[in-house]
Length: 285
Length: 264
Image (cartoon, rainbow over all chains, first blue to last red; front, side, top):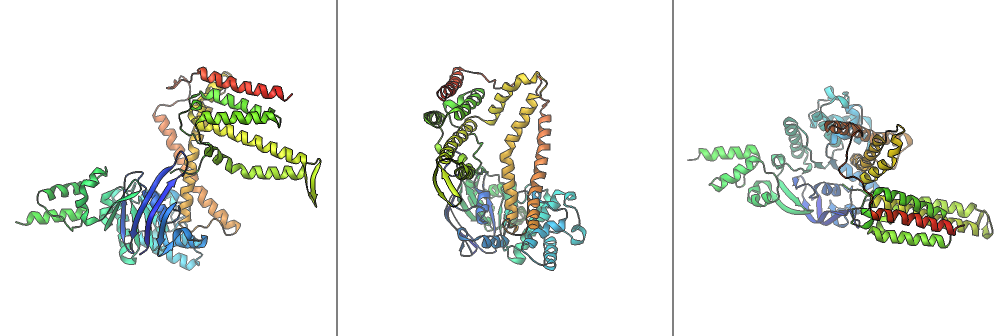
């Protein structure tokens, strides 16, 4: 059980006029090998939550345990080790690329880990293949000449090169075109299936989450409002609507069809899944 | 998200000071500073402290805000005080090897510290009660006569406003890039010079690029809204000096006058 989060609270600029309560009394357990989607409106504390998980911020109340270790009690060396074990991909990670060449960018992490050049090479190759970047074609390319989708993949590869056991992603699909998005979600799914990497992904696009997540947590004003398997999402339709979260069209359709006798219980609620189910039930006499 | 940038931050409270015209506040602050320097270390300084306390009440701000602005300067004050204690000669209070502390040294160190606190106080008071935009509007009005001499006052002030506006964003950006690199195993606290330089470079480069991009975007956004410099430009909120502004400003000149008078 990697993460056990208990009664965590965090306020920015605590005690000042500008104090902003981002997280208050949050409880959550995140299991090994899970793909967890986190949703919530702007200001619901999603990004803050991720930064707490990787100990960039420390909770002012409550505890966060990772594999039984309290994140607040780690020493500097242990923190650095922790951040190799938990990878974090920030919003628009391509903006943070600094190296000239794709290879050097991806090798930054492994080199920080003091691996020898052969191991670094190995890691870079692996990370590039995991993100669909052909090593021979890309490793000498200049980072400035890449398209934004390619840059995003390089940024993701540069985290994967650390071989994290757990991957945190803040709005990974923002600003990507459909193809880029599909590919990215595909890499994440593979990563989870093949290497059992825990994936925690924050976004406000429910349809992107439904494509890969099995569990969905909705945050509202710094608290867990909803914690549900994605397959049972339709039972929470009313409360999702109340939150002003945009529901994908196929879920709206599924909900209204359900009112007319269709059944989607226990079904994969991705767009393809819903379409399949509708077609199936239309064929039934 | 917000970081701990408190030194220049405007604090929105509805108070008498907040409502004043920026010009009157800037000039009054100037006279306050003159008074601080003119005051000899005695009753006058006590009086200036009373005035400061009075202003604090008028501003409706919590004393904590001032403490936060004061904190980063503690180390400077400490170093200065130590130097003054050690190196100012006079009647010695005690001597021990090379350490010798004189009455004069203590006297000067204390009076320096008390003045320095007042200076920080008035600057913080000004920035906490005046939005950067209002401050720059005020500045533009006051510098207007220089425009006749061919100085591009409006453009100059616009540049300053934008710079001020972007400082918090830049700090936030720097935090973000640093966090991202911490997450990739960068350790900013160990390693040789070349290693650290490398890290520094890896940190500065993205910030620089993001800032360039932002400047480009901003200039396009301004042009798209037909901005073409100060000529013939009108404003929504025209600055207007009211009775309170005159009272505040005259009060501060009066304080300066009194201090000046007594220190002769």
